[in-house]
Image 1 (cartoon, rainbow, N blue to C red):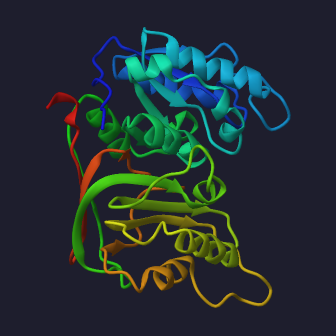
Image 2 (cartoon, helix red, strand yellow; image 1 turned 120 degrees about the vertical axis):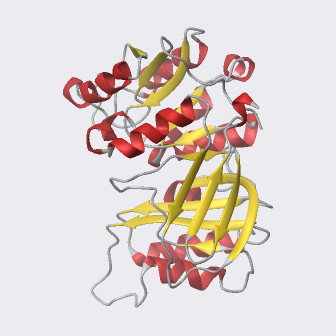
Image 3 (cartoon, one colour; image 1 turned 120 degrees about the horizontal axis):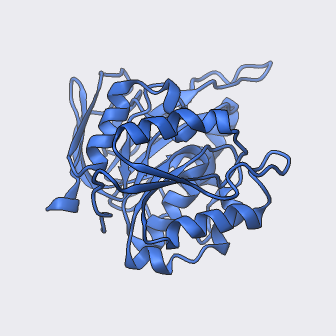
Length: 303
């Protein structure tokens, strides 16, 4: 895999919106934090465009993302927010310059489309981490962790034991993201190969029966068979029908991976939660599931 170069003080970070619209007030805190880190901030010229739910129409959002990828002065791209929309523009993007000079792409949720596309086609490490709109409510410890990793340092994350965990250790490339997005990308040009890799899953605001449906799709398509490990993050604000489904999201996932022998951990601190820790997507990680869970991510940009 390819690690983008670490950041240094004075580098420029672009903020672009590939999905839902944002306001200047919503972006101001992230800009201030990045400047406190010693970074310059460049906003996409269409960042505050407005087209119904979207940050401008598809062409405007694609234009900003393309600009951020191609501009040699920009060393990292921080996505403004998720929602929906990245999949509508991904096929318009030319990654030729990005392939020559990779830079950090930072976001989660709807940005899963970009993570998986880049991982599948370019083998460049990206960061599953809070977006600009999340910065004001993200704990300082998490923000400092992001800064440390961007500056070229390794990161070790820990999570408490969970009754559904399966104790075992594994190493492999870390991939995945939002379960609903992964489900929607099946058989597309942005789909992922999971064999021998550590899969991360999280989701928000889904019906429990649909979690089951999506896990069935992963299982029947062979994406669970041959995994090195499974990390389940926050399954936030799950919904149920009038007649209960009868299982939690975690219990549904545990049922679908019961027959396999790879390590599994639940309740990992990443996803649609305040304490949304970074994950280096496409990078090699070591997953240790014992009395507690440890995930070690080496930043090999400097090695």
